Length: 144
Length: 144
Image (cartoon, rainbow over all chains, first blue to last red; front, side):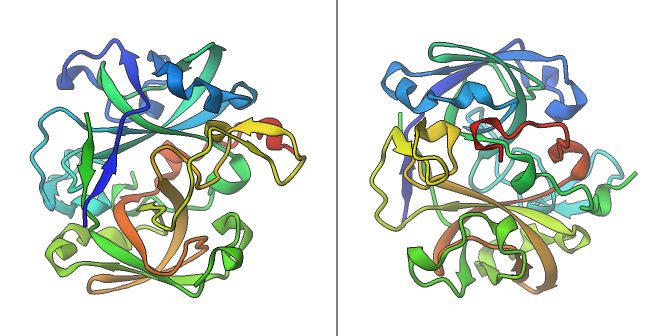
C-alpha cells in the first residue's frame, strides 16, 4: 500500500552539498534558510507567524541508499536507523525544528537549519512547547 | 513530482474512532499503545530501546478532507493548517513524541499516544533532548 505525497514548497539554504550540512540544526543555530511555500498553499500559513519555532518535515531527496544499520559517527558502533537521525531511512522524511524569524507572504525566514538547498517541503507544523518539549528525555546511546 | 512511501509498520492503540483520540499525546500521558515494526525492518530498531522517548511519523489514513484554513476549537478563529496540528493537511503526516516503555523484538510499547488504532507507521526517530527540546519556544496563537 503506497502512500503518495506532493511537495507543498521548497527549502532554500546555503548548503549545496551534503558535506556542508550540519548534522543537526541545533548545532548550527545561526544557519539561515528560507521556506518557500507554493502559492496554492499560502492560505495555510495564516497565523504561523505567531510561533517562534516550527517543525519542518521534508523529503531527503538526494540519492540516499537505505540502510537498516549504520555505524555511528560518534562511537563507531552499529545502530539501527530508527535509533538514528541519519537520512538513509526506508521512508526518507526529514525532521527539523527551526526558529521562525519572519514571514513575508509565502516565504518563512528561519534559522537553525540542517537541510540541503532545494529540499522538497512536505509539511509545516507549529512547535508547541507544551506538546513537544520533554526536558526529562534521555539521550540514549548518544548521551555524551 | 510525487513522493512515494511505504508503511514500515502499524500502530496499535485503544482508539478505534476519531472522537476517542486525544488531541495531543501529551494531554493523555497514560494512553498506551504498541508500535509494530514489520519484520523486514526490525534490524533498524537496534539500540532504539536506549531512548526514553521516540518520534513517531505516521499516515493520517482515515478520510481527512484537506483544508487550508480551519476554525480553532480553542478560540473559534480561523487559522492556517500549517499553524495547526489538525490532521486535515495537504500531506497527511502525523507527528507524535511518545514515551518508550519497552521493546520486545519488533514491538515497541509506548505511552502518550494520540493515534488511531491501525495507523500506518512511516518512520521512527529517537527524540533527543539537545536537538528537540526548546524550552523557550512560544505557544503562538494557542497560548493559554
